[in-house]
Image (cartoon, rainbow, N blue to C red; front, side):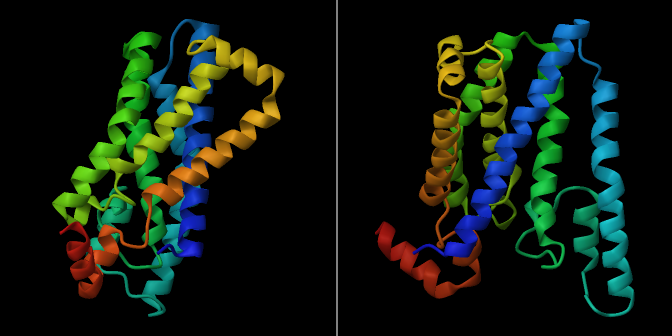
Length: 232
């Protein structure tokens, strides 16, 4: 069964990941076309200035609430949110800070992606993205079978970065560097492709994120036993 609000929430996060990958890659492509290169220092500075001020204010507010006893985050929670590793601790992190998992996924991807973009040709980068997206489904299956709490398929970076990678590929399509015929079709029918993209994201969320996730299996023994019976 599916939990409506949970699926809709993940639909929003997945959509954000795709849009984020698209915008960041589009900016990188434009920078390389205009200057002939990409400044990694400039990229990381811009990311820091865009993310850290608001994030630090949020963490400060959470710290004040903790000091006055309104919330009780553990030491592990503080470590994970300060090191952008909360996506690996969704079973143990304080619920008031649990939503930071999506930010940690983003930061992991954007630490690695500009390096690949900067030091490889467009063709190599595109092939790498396609391969990663293609491998995401079997990777999720393997991670689910491993039953490792730190590798929850609905939150951890290895299984969630594929959504951002899809956004990166869309940027290559829009700029004509990947599947140029599709770009021509998009120019003729832009609204149709936007609707198709949103529909595809929604289907992916419904198809690959069910109520019986690793989190629920581990937290609810009855669901775990039912899941085992289904596989038998």
